[in-house]
Image (cartoon, rainbow, N blue to C red; front, top):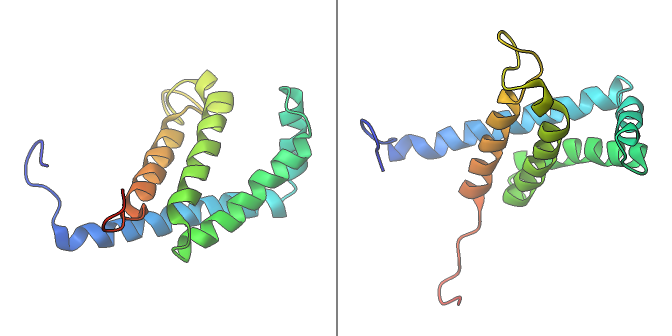
Length: 140
């Protein structure tokens, strides 16, 4: 469906989605690896507890591990849709708790806003949709 102009070329759509999948997976993997190797898990856990999450360190470590294992699964094309939806859920919560109070813009007209989170969430939802398993013939 083309709203304005020509639609995407079918021979390029698959390759474009592959680039998106790999790029998003690497961005999330780097984020989790940095947190784990640079001592960011404990402060993340302390912050979670400060806003009312019980077992803040456990949640922080769980998110960090998910940011390491999930992208590896996405890169291997295993459970891609489910992993992408999980990351979208984590990012949505982070966007609400951290970035939304700062407004829209990440830089320039603001600082630490939601625009990058929105982009990643939409990309993850597109990846989840693209890799969602097709229904089997005759399945009701």
